[in-house]
Image 1: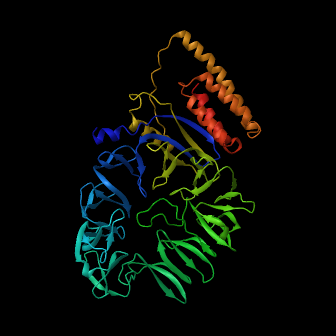
Image 2 (image 1 turned 45 degrees about the horizontal axis):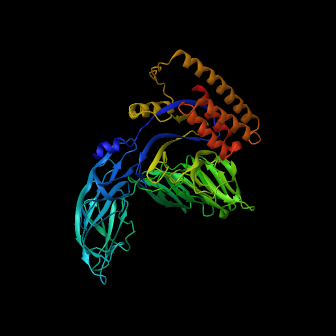
Image 3 (image 1 turned 180 degrees about the horizontal axis):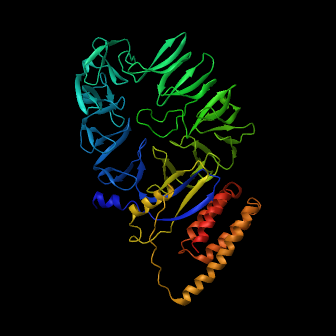
Length: 557
């Protein structure tokens, strides 16, 4: 089977849309595809699909990212660094985020120091008593032969250095520092590899051009731009280096944040402004940063709190910072009884039960958590503890932008879900249709664009589907059955609204009866199965989500 055919067959996107009202959860998961032998490439939105030719890279919409197969793939500073399927030592190269080759596949190792600078090492065989690299899988040793220096802004190899003149290197702003192995001298080079001068250490930025620099007057720091214009008058005892869009500032006793326009984002009223390591991946900053979905974690009087931009306190500091694991828009802590809680940035404190492990989901900024039950099944909950994906999977992994999750049904089969955040509390829920024929499922582009338009609030004209032709008697029978099912679902909703915990068993019985009446082939049956799964996970916690699903099922009757 050709790779093109194999990749196209991986995704079959079929949806039915249903509008939902106010929801407890501030995100929904929408299934957008089924796939085989696929894994997410860490720090990317690419799928790594195993084939007989090697690993193929595929975008989330099923398009081939590159025509080639690779032996290994990783992401560095937003670039795809891969090893070709050729035999030999020097088989590594690099692709841009658009899939274009930016470094040829002729190196033994590639190291991106930043989005602007990369080092490409040509290796030669060596011995155990003198080597730079060793193999993990065999007793093989290698020495660096030459180091090619790439400036990614120009897309060119700007220098080739022998091993004797290369010891270490660091990117500092737009410049590159290289330590010479022969004499230990560190030289700073510009984008054209012109030497600007020497510094003491490879991380010194004496010659680096910065868009913002500090200046000091009357014992206070201010900001100037690269042209020397004052961006912010001296206002703080210390302004630290910018990390992404923000810089920490200090009065000498308390800390806050400013942005690149010199605006105070978090007043300097806190002992610490905390950094999250679970934010969506950024090519320059990685997953580090301060702003998690509009919230900032702060420490006051040794306790954890949260604020919005401008200083609005959304969660008063109440829990000792040393007792929490800070994740961005939320934190985890364990109370004195041993119960695990999620403290959300909006002030909601949720005690969690029934999970063996709870971890902040990668790239979610603390809005989602990966959970595992006693049977080692994985699922996803949100920052309020609501189940958005039940514990029914071998594993779950998230894309670098935090907008998709790949859930492993088995070793070979996975399901892809799109994550929709809605800070206002109004959500649009898209639920999976039962599996259809291959011909009926071949419309991923049309369905995906309709989904995105609906989620963005646009009006979409959807062409009506042709009604199937049925015998009159069969239609009457089905109509009668649907009336009974509608009544069962109406009663289930009423019980959930009255007391979900006390009525859990009764609701389960109603839904099971409705499932029997509908049969396996009806479009609403899979919805009822999802509702039963959430019900089993906890009626009280998931009542709102279950009611939403039952309303969607009723609309299909």
